[in-house]
Image (spheres, helix red, strand yellow):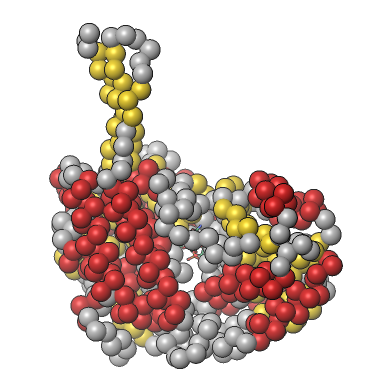
Length: 488
Ligand SMILES: NC(=O)c1ccc[n+]([C@@H]2O[C@H](COP(=O)([O-])OP(=O)(O)OC[C@H]3O[C@@H](n4cnc5c(N)ncnc54)[C@H](O)[C@@H]3O)[C@@H](O)[C@H]2O)c1
Ligand SMILES: O=CCCC(=O)O
């Protein structure tokens, strides 16, 4: 029996896919089960959609694009504002849904709903500011006007770690730009995505503009269809670098515009001129946010040798104060991991570091179900697996360094480059290191970067394209020149 959560607004809990403003099952009636990672409860079943159903979603989005792309920016601004208001009205229910699907504690889930919704507010503002240019011409008989237009039907593929915010960060700018979308939900967290679709419908989003396809086993086929279907003009993906590479290859025949937010391996550097207490608080926030399951979480913590012992002792003491537990329980500060495979990866990194001589200051083991004890390892050598591969879990690995030059080399010794952090009170050093880090985002004495107003994105194999900020809407637009002759 499915354990449907008690919600104030029960209509948020939808169990079908969403095509052309209708709730639909799969053609053969197949479904897949979704469970609560915090206690294993069966939450419900959603349709196992395949290629045929995905094509119908794309066709609906294509039909809707004909009129939606011609709406005024003001009407789209109003639409986004209505969605924003509805998400606010339903914020408590949505947060509860995030917690039971994803496991994160309720306070964090509330934070995610607010963060996710801020993209509707931000892009409602940006919708009416999609200015073009008038460019002085090379020929006296010519006038150049550059306009922005929506790019077309977009595919949106997102991960489970932010079941709402990873969707809204793409959906809001797409709608603001005048695009229509097909969203493929993560198999672990489809209900939050369906709730957002429901609120879009309530807000008056026309039929076919937002479509949601749920799938688990058919994900590779559905993903391939979205990448290869010539109607789709843009694929926006957040997830692993491994899957990003597959999607890029599949999109090459139709040369789609792509934005990829992929894996990270963020260095967190603490220099000996830092405020150590602030750096410890920052490391706690940055490393253990969502139990380490965010792409911008610190993955490698480098501490300068003279303050290493003090930093390690203070960090360990703070981690001892965590309360690991079920996300809806009062007092829980940290929740479970998403699934068994996530625990396996943390365990592999812990065992590898210990084998290479690391000391366990906290945790270092599974503690039942999907829970892994928040872990601090000291004296982790630079060549340990954790320093080269994203853990995506609650493991703080502390590595000692001697000089600024050494640590910059260590920090950049990776194929990916999403976020990087540093603590230092020397303003010259802050500039030097910020410029030297091969990442898309730097937090200088700041452990949390994420806001709707910033260009979020990476370098190297962390992907390309930017989400949020004034840049975010450009990912869903094309630039057109109209050169007008015969004007004199
Ligand atoms: N850069 C960012 O903004 C960002 C944000 C969140 C997560 N991530 C990254 O995502 C990873 C963790 O998430 P994950 O393990 O769920 O990633 P994942 O790549 O396995 O899955 C992400 C999404 O891709 C889908 N998917 C999987 N195989 C597919 C295929 N063959 N075709 C189409 N879609 C497919 C999944 O169903 C899911 O919806 C980490 O590496 C993390 O850093 C990056
Ligand atoms: O997990 C990656 C995205 C989280 C964020 O936007 O801060």
